[in-house]
Amino acid sequence: MTPIGPYSHIAKVGEFITIGGTAGVDPATGELAGPDVASQTVQILDAFEIMLASVGSDLGHVLHINVFLADIKDFDAMNAAYAEKLGESGPARTAVAVTALPKPGALLTMNLTAVTKA
Image (tube, rainbow, N blue to C red; front, side, top):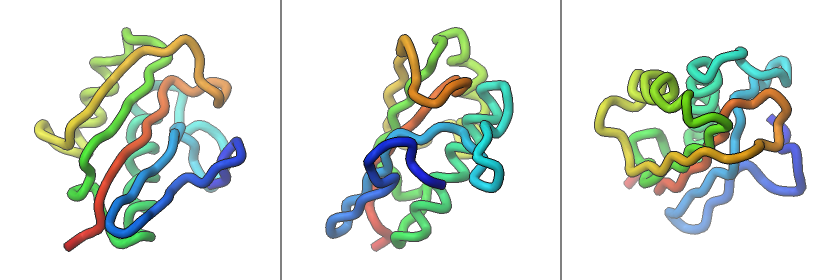
């Protein structure tokens, strides 16, 4: 997946990992994974899983996730898809509504902070 701007999706310093803003884009097609917040949420978390594995981590080592929703009305649907992937007691999280997102059609983006596996 290629970033839409001059940045890296993932950075690692020591055991600290950060993944920048990620939309629910299918890397095989470059298109959004679906028109709904649930499919885009799952795609983002799947992308996180792949990126974390590439630097020696996994979703179990995530410290915090920020969720940026284009419409706060999607909060419940995002929560349901999120909980399916991360469980009811996932990492610390912040969710906010924003006025716009860089990827046309994106209903949300997320970023995260994690650590490598011990």
